[in-house]
Length: 460
Image (cartoon, rainbow, N blue to C red; front, side, top):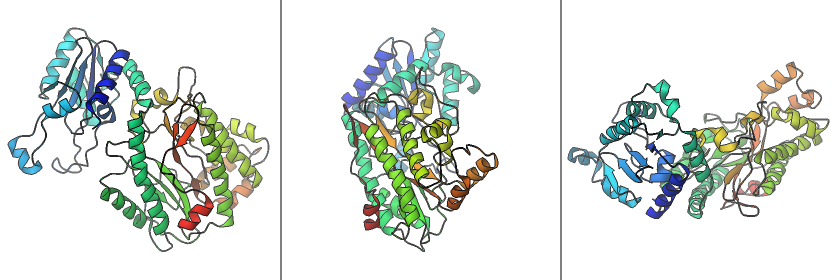
């Protein structure tokens, strides 16, 4: 946990932004793999962690804004439980460690909510993303799950997003603690990868290193020779000379802050000339995009400029033609770059995404564009100091997409399909770093992980 004062200040600020009613924040419960006594590894809800800090299942927190009272509801283990689990810190003691004076049995929360509703008081909740939480909230509110949306509080969502978007020095320190392990796993993958091994050999070594560090992955590892599949979690492929490995992986810090890093490197240790050409285009795009990151810059402009850099590079290679600014504005670049250039990072690897992406990345005036490629941009609004964002342009040759667009003659004024088809077995390249917005610019969070062609070939 952070010091109690950290959580007290966070809740005080939330109270200043949501001024009346009750804020109801359930923590996560255990989730069984195949029977109740065999659960998945527990992961606490991030909003509960942010405001109440206790990393234990079966808790519900209530902030009574009218009476200025806070309470954490949950049950301590029984003597019989202690046989299996060992001695546990009491909920009262844990609550004191996060600056909450009151801790009560879980059963009492239902009476508190019922009384507040009878008094006509507002109950503020965040959107649930787990089915058991949906049912729990429905029971507490005395409604069917389909009616739960009427209790989801937009003022609470906006307050939480505004607060959690700005990272404190202690939060940035946590992200860099995660990055220290990411550095080790990325270097390990580069050194261990060789023709004749399977992708799972590398994933197993990486995740073993993470476990040995007392940590866990922040999301399922993407490590694949088929980098054109953006979220490819299959690790069954044999790696051969001539393949590239795309390693998109992240780690959690001790307090669950995430890192998210992507590197692409050759299985044989040496890029082919064609791979070098595409890699250099992506690297130049990423460096240009990172240089744009500073307060006041709209992230949609970073995305546009990163896409434009990619398009110019592809034009020089003879894969595109025409006016590249017009091509990107029209969306022709999305054949090669169908996703967004980055997202928020924090307690969630896609930070706060469960609260609604449009609340996090967009505003009342900056709306999501509906076109393919553009609609996948998670963050578009102006950057502010102490945001942490990923910057991750890529070039992907997706055979199914190329064939579909060619059949429709889509954007043929910008795309040379006969040339593009020569790359259908290429795969994909992505380069990703985690970037802090500073008061007058940016800083790539450390430790810095090698990414130039020279650096990668020396390590591999």
